[in-house]
Amino acid sequence: MNAGPNAMDTSPAALDVLVIGAGVSGLATAFGLARRGFQVEVLDPGPKPGGVIGSVKRDGAMYETGPNSALDTTPLIGELIEAAGIAAERVPASAVSNTRFVVKNGKPVPLPMSPGAFLATPLFSGLAKARLALEPLVSRQPAGVEETIAHFVRRRLGREFLDYAIEPFVAGIYAGDPERLSVPAAFPKLHALEQRYGSLILGAILGARERRKRAETAKNTAKSFSFRGGMQTLTDALARGAGRVTLGAKAISLTRLPDGSYSVVYDKDGETLVRQARAVVLAVPAGEAARLAYPLAPDATRALQEIEYPCVTVVASVYRREDVDHALGGFGFLAPRVEGRAVLGTLFSSSMFDGRAAEGQVLLTNFVGGRRNPELASADDETIVTKVAAEHRALLGARAPALWNALTRWPRAIPQYELGHLGRMAKVAQAEKALPGLRFCANYRGGVSVGDCIASAHATAESLGAWLRAPVTARVS
Ligand SMILES: Cc1cc2nc3c(=O)[nH]c(=O)nc-3n(C[C@H](O)[C@H](O)[C@H](O)COP(=O)(O)OP(=O)(O)OC[C@H]3O[C@@H](n4cnc5c(N)ncnc54)[C@H](O)[C@@H]3O)c2cc1C
Image 1 (tube, rainbow, N blue to C red):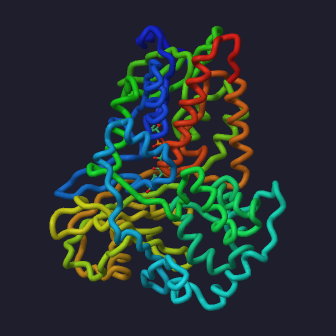
Image 2 (image 1 turned 180 degrees about the vertical axis):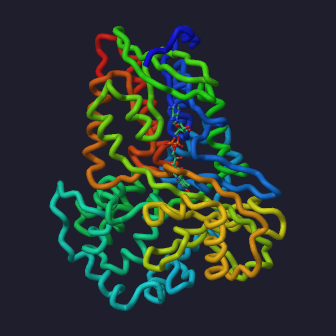
Image 3 (image 1 turned 135 degrees about the horizontal axis):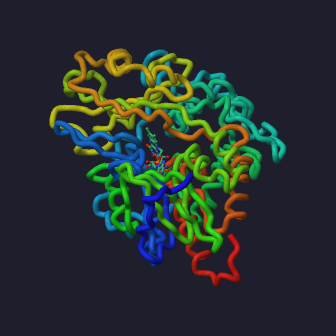
C-alpha cells in the first residue's frame, strides 16, 4: 500500500516502539516499554483504549462489555496494577461468588467445592463419581500427540464430567467447542499435569506444592477481582502510562525499511499517515495481524488466518430485585450444551461486586452464541432479548420483564486454540526470529484471559526492551 502524497511521519524523532492495538495486550506491552524508558506510541481505531474491555454506566448500574473480572493467577498482575497506580481501586469478588452454579435438568445446581460436597452433589451420578476414582489408573497419552479437550476428558474422567463440568467451563472461557479445542494449546497446565504425573488428581496435589514455590495460583483457586469503576479502570490506567495513545487510528500496512526499522501506514479520520519505529508490536486480533504481516511473513500470515473467532453477544439485564425469585448468591451459572439452553452462561454481576446495579435492582450479564450457537449471537436484538428473558424466567424465577437490557456484539469475540494451534504459534515465533524487532502479542497467543494477556505483554516488553538495548552488532530477534 502506498502512503499517498499526503502521507507524512509525524512521530516523535526517535520512536522506539509502535504498538498496534490498544487492548489490554497492547496497552500492557506499551506500559511496560514506557516504564523501561522507551519512546512508545499506540495506535487503535476505537474511540477508547481497552479493546473488548469496557465498563458502561447506565441508570445507576454499571455493566461490562467484555470481561467482568480477572483472576489473580500470577504476581505480575498485582505488580502491574501497583505500577499503574490503581491498587486502591481494586476490589475482590464477594465471598458469595465462590459459589458457581451449573444447570442440570433445568435447575442451577451449585458446583461442589469440597470432597464432601462432591459426594453429595446431584450434578454427577454415582457411576460418574466412582469412575473418577479410577482416574490415576488411566494411562497417559504418548508425548507429542495432540488431543482435543473432549477426547482427553472422556478418556481420563468420563462422559459426564465432559458434559456437566468441562464443556460448560470451556464455553465460559472460550465460547468454544471441546471437540475442537487442543489440550496442549488451550489448557497447557492440564496437559502438563498428565505428562508429568500421569494423573490429574495426583498432579493437582503435587503441582500445588510447586506452584507455592513459584508464588503462582491455580486458576481454580485464584481469586477473582475487578475495580470499583469496573475493568476499564485497568486499561484506562495503562493507557495513561503507555506513552502516546492515538485513537481513531487504524493501521493499514507494515513495511520493513532497509535499515531494519519499520514503517506503518495508518488511517486517521480519513487521512493517510505514516509512523516509523525501531520496533513494532502487533497487538491486534489474528486476522488483522495476518493482514499486516503479509507479505513480510507469509507462513505466519497463513497460520494466523486459520485462527477462528466465534461471535458472542453480551446482554446486560437489569431487574427489580423483588422480581427475581432466585437468591443470586453466587458468581453465576454455566449452561451445559446437553441442557439445550439459549445462554452459554449468566453472571450474577451485582452479587459479585458492589455498585453494579441501582438500589433494589440486580444486574445479570448473559453470554449468547459462541461455537455452540453462532446464529443466535447474530440474531436481531429482540430475538436475543426474548430468548435470554425466557431463560431468566425458567432458571431464576424472573416474574416480570427486565427494566432494561443492553447488548454488546462481538462478531469475532475470542480466538479458538483448536487442533494445530501450537504449530501455528511456532510459525509466528519463526516470523519474529526472521524479522528482528517485530513482535506478535495478543490473546491468540499464551492464553485468552486478562491475566494471560498481562503475562504475555510482560514477556514481550521484557524481550523487546532487551533487544532494543542490545548493541546493534549483538542483536538477535
Ligand atoms: C465477551 C468477553 C468476555 C470475556 N470475559 C473474560 C473474563 O471474565 N475474564 C478474563 O480474564 N477474560 C475474559 N475475556 C477475554 C479477555 O477479555 C480478552 O482475551 C482480552 O481482553 C483481549 O485483549 P487483547 O488486547 O489481546 O485484544 P482486544 O481487546 O481484542 O484488542 C485488540 C485491539 O486491536 C485493535 N485493532 C484491530 N485492528 C487494528 C488495526 N488495524 N490497527 C490498530 N488497531 C487495531 C482493536 O480496536 C482492539 O482495541 C472475555 C472476552 C470477551 C470478548
